[in-house]
Each structure stands twice: as structure tokens, then as C-alpha cells.
Image (cartoon, rainbow, N blue to C red; front, side, top):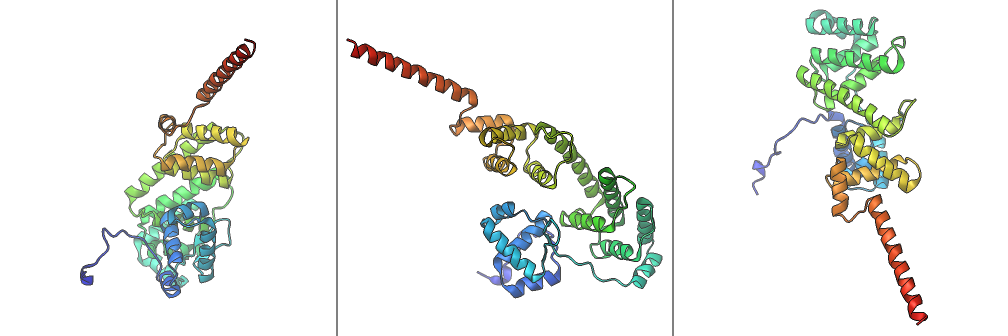
Length: 312
């Protein structure tokens, strides 16, 4: 084969910092490189079971690989989530101020961000905002939508009186960048999708009987994953019913195994699931009850026949 003609087929943008690429190449660890790429592609949060399924590794192996990435300085396990370590270049405050004065687009972005947050940006905030604008190269109009979205989400969760830290905006910017949301149209479409998912999450919460409280972080993670897989409230209510029937309570990990089993068979709606169960030989509760009643009748018939034979 002529090696000069080899090239990537339909290449797609997937940003990997030069520093991270150098460390991965230096380590020569194929599993570590695969897990890193999986995390970058999937948004950065490590779900050990999902990663194990995607990479065809055991959960134990994924944990071991994650530990090696952490030792390389490519994972940060300081919070509840594990995320690929990213670094915005260290900009000098004087350079940022000068750019804000000479670049009308960035100047407008600063003014809009300050108006949205209701305060003047600190020197650190300005550096982070400039990093999103310069290093991630997100257009100003996209960043404005992003900041407004973060403000709205923060206020709904904590109230308008609680200040919004810029770290949340930076984190969301990386999430958008990883999803390749780089145009105004893509940003609008993504915000519409987030609204759809929020509404769907509320419906699913009701269908699971969770009322009078907010979802926990773990519950929200599971529900978001199921929505990503294409499941709605009715199918998930069926999965919850089977979980409670089989285990006595709503065990999220057990329910997740049911949902992913359906997903693996291409079953996502209640009619598809019921039809798939019939094809696979599964029985509904009604079918099981009818079968049990029939068996009991047959046993009674045999008992009477046996008594009749014994008594002549």
C-alpha cells in the first residue's frame, strides 16, 4: 500500500490541546489516549459505565486508565465530576485591556457581558472572557447567547440575588466548543434543544413519581443520558415499573441496565418494547397469570384422573 496516499476519511474537528497531545504521545498508552478522546468527544464528564461500554473495557479497567490520565495531569478529579484538564493561555491584563479598547467586537462583548451579569468584570473575569473569545475563537454573538443562557440557568436554580461566577460561564463555553457550536444558528438550535430536554426532564420526573423536590445530580445524569438515547416518559415509566417489580424499589442502576438493553435492541417506545418482548419470548404480567391459571387447571385435572384410577 502506498503510504503517501493514506489520509483520514471525512475528518471532523475535534480539538485537543497541543500539551495534552504531547503527553499522550510521550506516554505511549493506547487505552489512555482512547479514553481521553472519548471524554473530549462526549463533553468531558466521565461516566465509568458508559465509557466502559463505548471502549469495550471493564469498569475496573476504565478506573485504572482514568488514574493514569490523572497522573499525567490530563484529568482533574478535584470535583464531583472528572473532566479533561484544559488551560486558557495566561493573558496579561494590559494586553486584554488594550485589546478591549482596539477591538470593537470584544469591547461590545465586554459591555454586554457586564450588563447581563449586572456588575463590572474583574481582571480575572476579563482574562477568562478574552480566552473564550481569542483561544476558543467563539464569535461574539455566540458568546453573548452563552452568557445569557448561563445567567438564566443560574437564576432559575439559585435566584437572581446570588452572584454568577465566571467559572460556570467558562465551563459552559468549553461544553459548547466541544459540541462544535460555533455559529449563531447552531447556538440558537442548541438552546431550543436544551429547552426541549428541560421540558422532557420534567415530564419524566413526573412519570417516575418524583414530586415535591429537585432531582439529585445522579438522577439528572441518568435521565439526561436516557434522553440522549431517545427515550421518552412513557418508556421510562415502563422501565421504572419493571425495576420496582423486580427489586422492590426504584434502583437507578438496575433501571439503567433495562433501558440500555432496550436501546441495544433498537426499542425506544412502549409499542416497540412490548413487540420486542413478544418476539424475544418475554411474557407480560397478564400472559404470565393466564399461563399459571392454565397450569393449575391441568394439575387439578391430572389429580382427579389419578384418584379415579386408584379408586377403580
